[in-house]
Length: 480
Image (cartoon, rainbow, N blue to C red; front, top):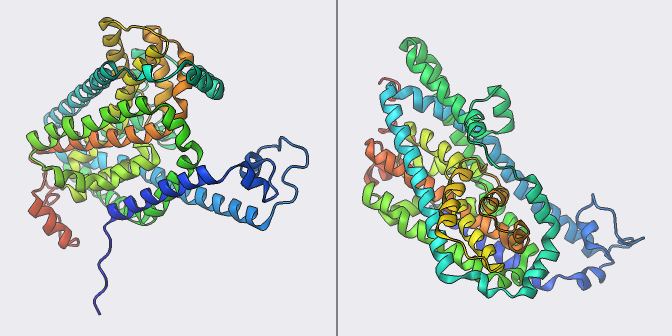
């Protein structure tokens, strides 16, 4: 008997995402302090987070069975989400190390490596500057700060003031010399253990280059090992993705249940400006690259990278999504590994288009809250500062807010205005991370097309239909 057709991964993830949003909204609107009180829970915060001391003496002394069940479901939900994120982070560093060493060494041509590297970094910096400019343009036209009343602003400042102070204290202005120096790890194994992606990329690239400079018969043995390990990690990615739909549900429920619609509604204009800018990048600017330059159609591109986009939205982490982005570009889009293994890790490290765009909008928005008119010179300063700050921005949730402090300081905008936008930062962090990895994939497609290292749709279909056949794109990779 024929088995029923399996739902494609991106549809499974989308279903999990939508279900998570709906359940999260239901919990936020219907589950309140009175609901907990009816279950014998007087201090829900300490009940949910067992590390907190109850604010009320003898609170939560007689929890009902339903309260215990709700706590179990909450913990199980967090466990699934955290397990998935750990799996992705477990994969992220090994896949960069193995694939980048293979990609750099198999080129066997330093001139080609230099050519690919120059194109990659130049395009990344250009798209980042464009993203900030788009954000500033939208913010100046719509003036989202004018939609927020003084009472609302003061209310958010009181609610999120402590969090804002923590972000401000954590921010440090980047020094260009330190930024460049920190690319070189003091100890490569320590960089791997800490997941410092920029240093991991540098160390892996250096080993790959060194392999091209020694005798080929010696290098081939090492390259073959790393090539096999790359295939192993790709299979691990596929195993981890089995729980992706459930993990996406778990991750999104937690965020939506905490945030709700009240905060989102109060800052709707600001959120819409950021989202409009991000959509402009993804649907207008990036297609100039992947469609007009690389010749990859809309449908093919977005169908190929949709699992990575949805996971980026759920996890709000470019680094954690990197293994899936690489799998999508190589297996579904048909980009040769020697290009994707170089372009994508660098993109996850320095290409933060969505984050840079958000910083531009946020800077103008906060300035408008305080009736500050930013001059052209100040806005150009924002473009330059946000571009440089994005290079040093780690691909983890929430770090963009810390970098925003540096951008605000560069033009003298009041830092305590950050408290106003903290309530919606997480949902916007998810949106801008999707934009970040879309930009990474676009640049990867452009560079691959310029190097003749991308398959046609027919080749991709044939390879996916016969997954155990030798990949014609990678054939001869070790025999160059």
